[in-house]
Image 1 (cartoon, helix red, strand yellow):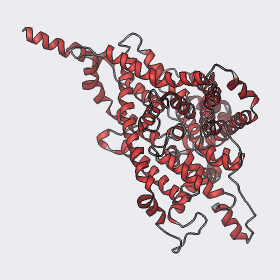
Image 2: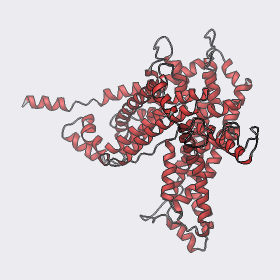
Image 3: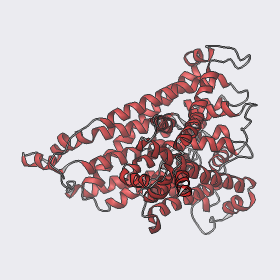
Image 4: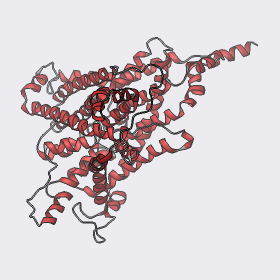
Length: 571
């Protein structure tokens, strides 16, 4: 009898408090330590290490920094407005009209999240570079013009805005399309009964109800473009100007100016927090309240004679954002040069042979990329699962602190986090710079909010009574989580894992500051090859990256054993 009691007590030992303390320490190190060193170095002179305000003074007196911030802010708002202007009518057409193929078009736009923006920028280099761009070469050849004639030039401020917007508008599209799906048809029917035409109903009923989603999506597009490094580095630097992310990166070049880089990162962090708070406030507003149960299915509008004009608009957008960039990448991977026409004589596999068998950095980069992707996805999903459980079930006092730490990195731009991690771990104490450990820490920090939010929302669908039954039978909280809750959430766990994996293998903003020759990743190799102009090899690596991403998304959504995940690939 006594043995049974002892065994029961051992079985019910609750490790929640020790694990809470361990998670609290781990998340604090991941999030707070980089921010501490950014602030510390921003008040430190590079030479003697003494206290100084010179770094912050330079933010308003150094014309290169002022110009970089001004261009970045102007670019970000231009991208946000352009994304909204394109995405809103697209969302309305595929969500609320009888447009032919609307479900297929919606799937294509959602799938475009998988495309890394820096790869899209390289695709537009191939298409619209002034000398070698496919569009300019074809234009000159068609009309017999000399090589000085340029139809389009991607190396301009306008070209940068266009290239980023092509791969940012899906953020706005997704939010607006989802909002349109939820607009009650009863309100639109009431407008029609009172004599309102289709356009009047759209303008006075539908549009105001989805306005918060439009504004929130626009803020996300602004935030994404403001904190982006890859596309500006590929397009803006050859054009002869900096945005703030590329300027911060340049401060790490020899001789490094770490204090100034840290100070320059702080306003970017503040702007990011402000934009996220504004987005949360907008989405938190209640645009309408449904009373009395179901509100009916979404109202589908008939396009009539406008159907073909709508189809032309949708196909034009998809051509600019998906068909042309992907076509350019595929063509360049299988022809000698980007400007060559596709003939039997120009088709070649030499780029594939070079990348897969001759280029010494490829196998190391692929191994590092997928190793870090698998490790990051596994560790982050496990941390997110336990953290979300402790926070949502409120089983321990102070568990909400874990939720704050788990979501905080979403407010830290990648380039800012890269600065903080470099300052934290490249010192003699840790000496992690030049190892995969610093990259693993970076990826865990960057991807933690995505994993946590996925798992946190999933816990809302599992009633606590199931876990309480396990607790009554003598199981500890963690045993209940492992035996009861986790199996019920297996689909969400797999979705979170895939979500984090795809985000990891395409990351560039923080990675660019933390890699060395022995820790190169595919994204960094692509960036390095772009500087040397080897577009064929870039496209081969880009295809490998895309195939791996799409394969993971496909598995997450299609394999019956996993129950069909609800994963959406990020951009």
